[in-house]
Each structure stands twice: as structure tokens, then as C-alpha cells.
Length: 217
Image 1: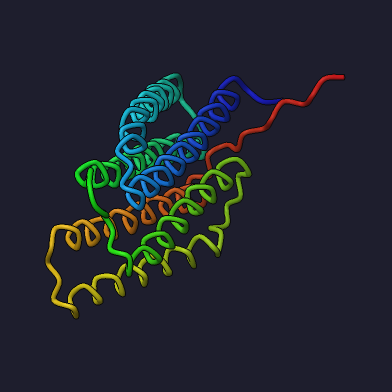
Image 2: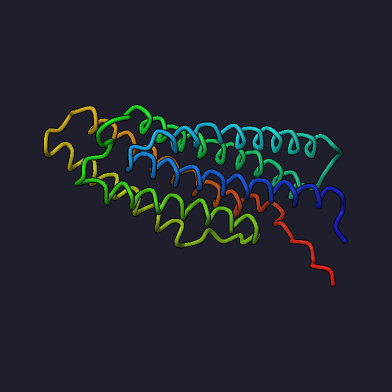
């Protein structure tokens, strides 16, 4: 039978998983705004970030209360400390999505992304969003193995970013749109970094996985 501490830790883990989902959706929407130069969608990403921030603050408060509630086994403390690290990573993922949205807002006319790099930008975003889902799944399942596809996707994002920068340098491009593209590439790679950090924290700290309540009837 679960103790109160374990129930609260499971609830915290579910909250962190939801933050990963929200960050992934924010990045997906931010990319849509970037590729379609849609300031309205970008504004929505920025406004909704308050929800991620509020959830992060709540998660941190819960984690600190769990740390100070009473003496715990080392494994319990490791799980809570891991949850604090994950909170920071998930919040940062949301912030990175906002920065992509801000690039889209700056380009209220014309194309924010040159046609020849739309594909790589879309691919990097899709992989980053997939990694956010992987982080969510790792938290909910409690799987202590870092998913191999998370590491693979991270390597692909880094390679796509490298090729993107190499292409811009080789063409000697330094226009405003090109600077924005280079910045967006960095933001996707950093988002990917944080998603992998979360998966690794699940391995090292193994926060209690969320158990969905059984359906009645």
C-alpha cells in the first residue's frame, strides 16, 4: 500500500509529465508560427507560457515540501531531487518555445524562414516535439532505461543543426532571416538537450511513475 509520500510524489511526477506535453505543444505551435509567419499563433504560445511557469512553480513547491516533510530513505530523496531537476528542464523547454515564437513575431511580413531551409527547420522541430513526448512517456511509465530513440533523435537534431549552420556559412549569408534561422536551430537543439536530460533524470532518480486510477463500473 502506498504511503502519503508516495502518492504525492506520483502526483508530482504526473505534473512534470504534463509540463513536457505542454512544452512540446508550445514548440510545435511556435514552429507553425515561424514557418507561416503567423503572429497570432506566436502570441498564443507566449501567453500560454504563463501556464507552464505556474505549473513549474507549483511543482517546485511540492518538491520542497516533500524534501522537508520528514526524514526519508536515500532513494526517496533522490527521486525528489530528480523531480526538481526535471522541473527546471521542462520550464526551460517552454521558454525555448517562447523564443521561437518571438522570432516569428518579429517577422510580421515576409517569410521568417527561407524556402530552402523550411524542411530542416520542420524536421528539427518534429524531432524535438517527439522527444518531449518521449520524456512524458518515460515519466509516466517509470521506465529507468533511457529510451534509445530519444538519444537517436537528439543526435539527429544536432546533425541537422550542424548542416543548417554549415549551409548558411558556405553561402556567406548574414541577412536578418538567416540570423533568425541560425538562432532557431540553436533553440531546437537546446530544447532537445533538455528533453534528453529529463529522460536521464528518470534513469538516475527514477521519480515514482504515475498510476492512473482504475475505472469504476
